[in-house]
Image 1 (cartoon, one colour):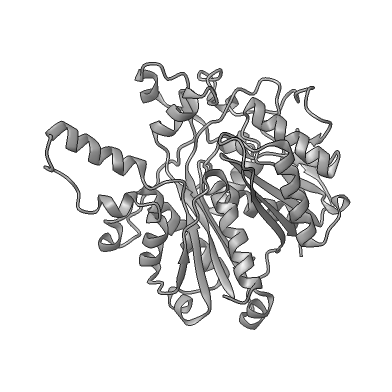
Image 2 (cartoon, rainbow, N blue to C red):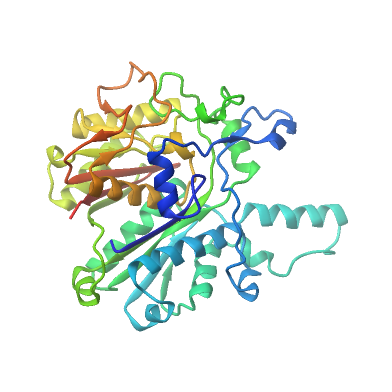
Length: 400
C-alpha cells in the first residue's frame, strides 16, 4: 500500500481520524431530530461534522451527493500521499474500484418528497439520477479525477471497502493493473437507523449518553450505531512502487471473500471461520502468525457472539479489538478505513482498545479483548468485515 485517505465522524482526513482513535474520542452524538420520529427508539448516530465539498468545481459537483463528495476528498488525500497526480492515473496501468451500499438515500428522499407533495414533476432536479444510481460514487469519482480507465463498483454493504481492496489486490496479482485505487463511501440517513431499529439491532439504551452507545463485546452492548464517511487506499505492485520511488506503508498479503449462502441477516460462525482460514492460506501463514485481529464487531448481541467464536476457533486467544465503539458503523467505507488503521497500528506497534468495552461478555470465548491501548511487536494482522447476507471479507496485512 502506498496511500490512504479518509473522512470520518472523528476527523476530516486520515491523520485526524486515526488521531481521534488514539485520543479515545467518540464521534457518536445525540440526533435531536430523531427524537421527534414516532416509534424510533435509537436517537444516536455518528455523523461527519463540518464537511464542505466546495473544493470540487461546481460543474463537477452538481451531480454529486454528499457521499460522492466525501469520496473525492478521501481519494485526493490518498493520491497525494501516493505521489500520483490526476494526469498520471491515465498514463499508468490503473484501476478504480470504489463502491457504496446504495445510491444517495438523501437525494432519493428529496426527489420523492417533491413528487408526492406537488403531485407533479415540478421542482425535480435533473441531476438526481446521477446521485442515486448504485454506481454513483464510482462514476462521480472518475469524473472528478478525469479518469478514463477501468472502473469497478462493488456493493456489499459492510464489506464493500474491504471487498474493493481485495479486488484491487487480485487485479494487481493477475497483471491487469499496477495500481488500484480502492475504497467506499456512504452517507448517514434516518432510513438506515429505522431499518436497524425495526429489527431491534440499533442501540437505544444510551440515548442520553451517546458516547457510550456502541460497545462491541461488552456485556451491555445493545446494537449498531450508524455512521457515514469515506475511505480510500492506493495499492500498487512492488515493481511499480519501486520504479516510482513511492513510500511503502505495508503489504496486503492475503485475502478471501465468500458468501454464507444462508441467512440474509448475518454470517454464520462457520462461514466466518472458513473465510479467515482461506485468507491465511492465501498469505501462506499459520494461525500462530497472526498477532492482532481488527474485528468487524458492530455491537450487536448475535453478531459479536458469532464473530468472537469464529475468531477463537481459527486463531485461539489472539489480541482483538473493534473500532466501532469510537465511530459507529459507516458501512461501505469501514473496511477500507479499518484496514488503513490496522496497518498504522502495525507500523507503530500500538494497538487500539475497543472503546466502551468495560466488562467483556463472559459468554464469549476467551479472546484477548483489548481494553487499553496495548504495545505489541506484531508482524501480521487480520482485518475482518462481515456484511449482511453473509458477505465475508478477510484481509491479512504484513507490516513490511
